[in-house]
Amino acid sequence: MRKHADTSARVTRRGLTIAGLAASATLLLSSCANVNSSASSGWLPEGTAGAHVTSETGRITTLWVGTWIAGLAVGALVWGLAIWCMVAYRRKKDDPELPPQLRYNVPIELLYTVVPVLMIAVLFYYTARDEAALMDVSTKPDYTINVVGKQWSWDFNYVDDNVYSSGVHSELNPNGGVTGTPQPVLYLPVNKRVEFVLNARDVIHSFWVPAFLVKLDMIPGKTNRLQITPTQVGEFQGKCAELCGAYHSQMLFKVKIVSQEDFDAEMAKLKSLGQEGQLPNTLNREPLETKDLKMVPTPTGSK
Image: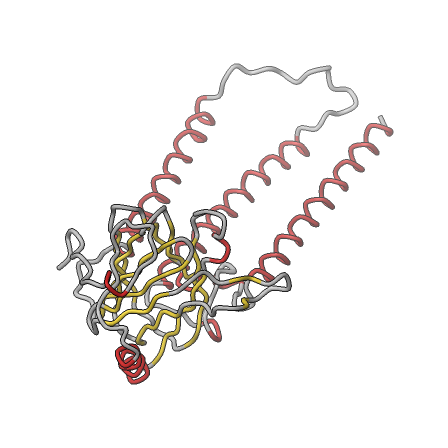
């Protein structure tokens, strides 16, 4: 009996050690994933000094952290009950070979059927509520930018100013970072509501700026739309989040959130460079030429 107890204790200690190491590794890797993150945001990417980068990120962070708190509470309850059962009903010296066998317990079965259903219903409600708010494009935007994904870079049509910028895929060096052609840059005015009209010229891409905490697919032949309000001046990394071919990892871009004056100056600069007009966003795998410039077709449902 003593030998059995010693073996059980060793197994328990080993299990706790492995669990502790796994938890520590998870926290360490999470903290390394983004230097601007903290426990209060659930280790999601943050802006400078923990500030939200857009007016929408607060809603996303609240849902994320709330879901984790609920999940951890359920996990603690389940593990607590399991450990309590193992301790309270552990086999004793004079116990028979098996404990009494019961066919069912109606109250317990109702409990573990009804409670999970209620939990899923609550989670679904808050997720659906926040998703509807994040995808709402009924508000008239201050600016509209047509983002066109292509293998393996990005075109940006600034619709209101009738100018554009076009990029080519960035080359990554083995030591990290980008060499050769710089990443295309998407300029956004701070504290202005911007609507992104998302199109793909060839295959499925995905518009993703991790600091915005939201991404949206770009599907050939379909126009998706997303509105955000940047609230913090700064530079952020953007990338494609959908495996789209051989150079998917090099499909990068920069986002620069600037003051209204700097944004206007950049629009004037593009115009002075002759980048006036709008690049096509329709399906076409061929390289664009100057003669291809035309106004962007009005997306279905645009205001």
